[in-house]
Image (tube, rainbow, N blue to C red; front, side, top):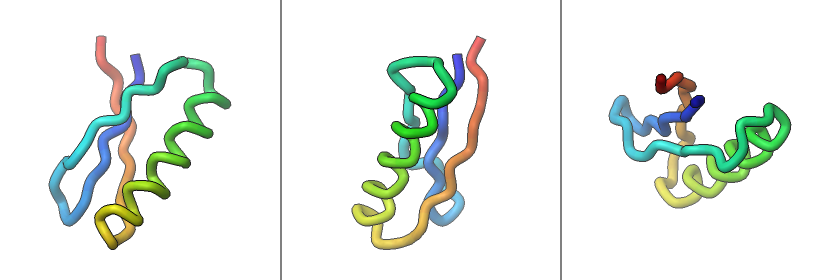
Length: 53
């Protein structure tokens, strides 16, 4: 399973777990969440992908 960690100022603040593992659906969901979180934290956020086995 692929998850995305949201990093603000070097700290992992949230983990986004996509509903679907289809690439296009993940891209849409993560992009929307990153925009929402950037507005919420007031600073650009970094999104890093990791795999959970």
